[in-house]
Amino acid sequence: MNSFIQLPARPNYWLCNARIPLALLADDAPTRSPISRFQTGHYCEDLVAVDVQIEAGQIRQLRPASAARPAENSQVDLGGGLIWPCFVDMHTHLDKGHIWSRTPNPNGTFDSALETVQKDREQRWQAADVYRRMVFGLKCSYAHGTQAIRTHIDAFDEQAKVSFSVFQNLQREWADRIHLQAVCLVSLDYFMTQAGEQLADLVAETGGVLGGVAYMTPDLAQQLDRVFSLAEDRGLDLDFHTDESLNPEDITLRYVAEAAIRHNFSGQITCGHCCSLSVQSPQAVDKTISAVQAANISIVSLPMCNLYLQDRQPSRMPRYRGVTLLPELKSRGVKVAIASDNCRDPFFAYGDHDALEVFTQSARIGHLDHPYGDWPQAITRTPAAMMGLPDVGYIGEGQPAELVLFKARTLNELLARPQTDRVVIRQGRAIDTTLPDYAELDDLMEPESR
Image (cartoon, rainbow, N blue to C red; front, side, top):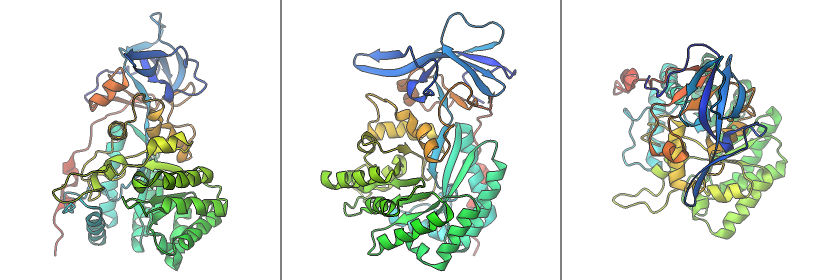
């Protein structure tokens, strides 16, 4: 462990002289005021200077940082370092993860990603292979400080039974470390078949979320009506991949919103990607966001993956980021989260399941600074609420001590370095943040035997 501090072995201690972003404090936290505003010229960050008491795995007390600190307990001086709640990564593809070494994307395009993943899935995705790669991803996520993950699972035909069985085993094995949710991933036309109905039954049996990829087809509205009906009959939430392109004619997000209004759907609806909003006219954008707002749909953006795939052409500098309209959606009252998406597979060659990297890159790509405001909630409290975890993603008295400590004293310092010396606290105790070795998967990367 390369940690910048060492916590005491005893279960009761104080984290003193710390700072917490105001956006990450509980609404009723006694330390919300006074606020310490760290300002340089017109640039400022809303941070609260606090002392935090940890007792038996919980946050017992929050109080304004003070030179007069209790002497009866162990104390750790953070030197003004930041404390965050553990992260929530609500859109991943753990089943695809870490196949890059054996199945790279030949040209980095979206179409090639689809093709190469399909070949790898058909040839290699037995239970043992899926299990080991998913475990590797979970180890990385846990070491970096992630507490909850929603993963989409490729679910065509027999692959659904294989991968959902693996997921259920992992859900049990990791129950005390990471809260796991699964979403089935198929094209929406699959639900028009008997196999699609059986998939909806499987999702319901495993307590998952019904999902799929929406494409601009003549019968999209009919497909969506079918999916909404299947979800309503089984009491399932919905999570769609929508408009993962830079074609301004792709408006599947609007179709989803209109379907939700038609069905008066009461469950949670999440739509991911929504890239085409970034290249549509102001009138088209306004019409779609109005429908999303009326349907109470939440949006999750995947900036790193979309930046990698979108507007990629040979020997040409990309012109567009491929990232959806985060500030515009948020300003209209739409819940907006950011997440990691793919990791070391044909859809995204890089990544390490580190939600802080996601936040850092998103802030740079989407200009989520000047001010940062409550954007730190996009990788913590907001996705937790979208996943139905209302007590996760913020810091307050009586909350479990699920925290990430940083030597960085401001958000500027936090985003300037990768923070590899962070301390992750789970149930009040510091965990081993050593990352798994890529060599663990070497035997899975060998060429397929013919």
